[in-house]
Length: 363
Image: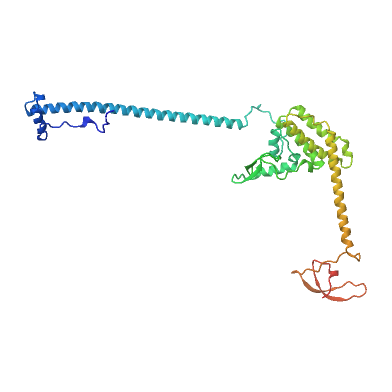
């Protein structure tokens, strides 16, 4: 490949070969036998000019080809850059479309409605965490359907949103196997005030079950499932266990055990009819009730024995003496009448607001 020209040969002026500077070149051509036709200075100058024009023409052609090659190379680089830019823009558009599709998947669709037709039922007022789990057909403790939970959700909704505050929460909700995640303080999460079903009273169970049955619509449960849950609570309402001592507590435990177990079985794709009473589980609940009553009795006996031992430590049978009076800023010196059934004597004594003045000893 010829050496690259850094200048335009067309801009080079033709030298004056008749000048004295080229005299030696002209003399060399005149005496050169290979150039017999050159006999004087003018002929030698013309020959030198012709040779220069030949060389300049060849340089011009080289420079022109060089310029064309540079232009083609610049065009190719520009086309390559344009192609890269087009590919990048196409990738950006595809990425934007993908993000739009992902957002659209998470976005609640705008379903059609009948103009002029209002709601046919009262809107549900339940805790947002319960609403989230009910929509996912997951287990929710009955506490979330009590008025206390609804009040908490209402107060939380009134709080000012502050995304700079975060806290660690269990992603699995009530499950201990859930991963720990970092969530905003106003995210939909479990309530720290939630009470397990086993610690609810029977009145709370009755109060919460109505809201629970209504909230089943959030998960679009089939009618047979809604009927099953309704019969489950109805069977407990008419159960003979309510008439027995401790029966209310046994049914509270039974409800907590069976409802949680049914949702776990449903996740394993092995649900059963919850309305059918499980006598084995009910018997276990009765055992728990009897154990709780026995432990409560033992605690009562321990307390009574402790009180008896306290009085037995005093051989006279009198209660232990009170501690000495404690001095305070309200210490005052006055004269009080000391209680004496035989004598009415006045002693100088002090007034202590922490003691019985009849037990204060004289100074």
